[in-house]
Image 1 (cartoon, rainbow, N blue to C red):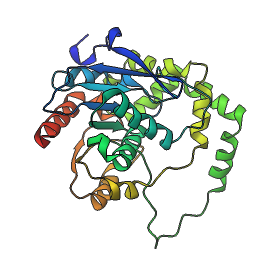
Image 2 (image 1 turned 180 degrees about the vertical axis):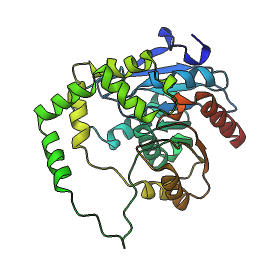
Image 3 (image 1 turned 90 degrees about the vertical axis):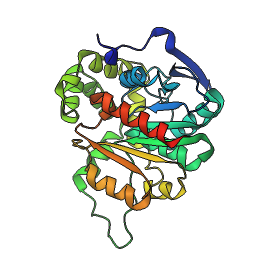
Image 4 (image 1 turned 120 degrees about the vertical axis):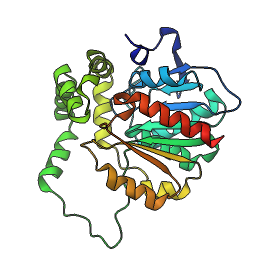
Length: 296
């Protein structure tokens, strides 16, 4: 097994009590006075394991922290209402209580949106922000009428809000074959889809509370719009796009980010929705150079 695919050492796994729940995180590397620590935040259905290649590649230059959001990975999965506000609070309190100094937040997908919320609403905690195929809605322009509701989509959403259909869907999507099929849709490099990756995603889905977390995310309301968050953002922003992502038009979304935050730095990579895992050496190099050049 190569260095870039090494598993996270068992002694790096630690738990933090937050709101009477066990939050799992990993810390690697030494604290440096001349550069900020990094906080890596996974996307929906992923965990700290999804950052193993980045932890391995960056720990020589930074103190690196990776955290499992409540409801995911090895963190507790209580029967709560999950939302961007909840994960924003978790990340902010983790930085202030555990790390104890401003950090560069790097988030993928859902983790990117949660990281943006922290950086925008708690600027004292964010030395910088790195977004990798970040999720989150922009406001609809005032002159653009909203699209008419799709009755089939609305009926499906109502159905999935019911406990039994939601539970049945979850049983289906957590099967290894379905996980692998989904990964094949969102990774350009199929060799990056290993048995270990499939198992890393499947394992937390077997926890007793996982089905209710899945159902709760379906019910959660959209959070604060990205353009409104960008109006409040004050720290440096790096955007890393896997432009082969089938779930979003990265070029169009990148243009929206530039419109609202023209000082950002961006790179488009030949990868899918999870560029940090698919092309880790490129992501690690770009992230490392950007942080060091900032002289934070």
